[in-house]
Length: 219
Image 1: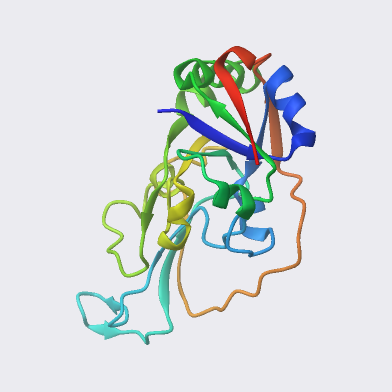
Image 2: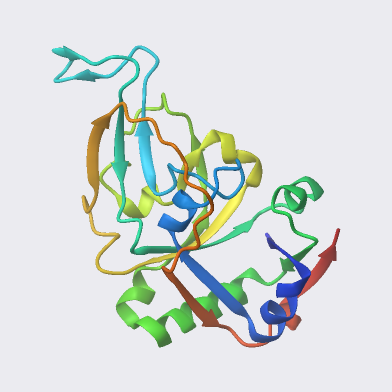
C-alpha cells in the first residue's frame, strides 16, 4: 500500500532530495486554525459523549448532555508526521497543496525513518515509535480499553476527519506513551479556537534522497 504526502511545491525539493521529515507535537494540531482539515482540538484526546448523557458509578449519578469525558495525552511530548492512504484531488484542495509525493516503497521509507529516530533520539525512543493508520470513531462510542493508553489514542480521531484516511508516524518523549500517563476530566467546556499559532514543538529528521522510492503527482 503506497502512502501520500500532500505539500506545496516550494517544499518538494527539500522532501525529495533531503528526505526532510518534520514531526510536529500534537499540541500544534490542537492550536492551529480549526478549518476542518489540519486543526483538531481533540487530536491526541479521546472524547466520550453518549447521546443519553454520561452515567457515573454504574448509573448512580447522571450528568447533563452538555458534559463529556475527555482523556488527553501529553500533547506537547508526542510527535507526529501525517500522510494519507489515498491520492485525491479533493484532499489536495483541502490541504492547499499543489503536489503530492507518493511513497511507493513504504517498507524502505519507514525503515529509514526508524533509523533516523534512533540516531537522533536513541534506541528507546525508536523502539516506542509507532507507524500505523488512524482509526475513526464517534463521540458516542464506548471508550473501552482505549482511554488509558496514549499510544492507542494518538491513532484515533473523530469521524469527521475520516475522509483523510490518515497514516501516522509517531514517537513519544518524556514517557508520553506510558500507560495512564494522561489528563482525565469530565467537562462541559466549550472550546474557542485561537488564530493560527506556529508551534515551537517540532523535530526534524533527514532520510537522505528518496527519489528512488517515490514519485510526484501535480494538481
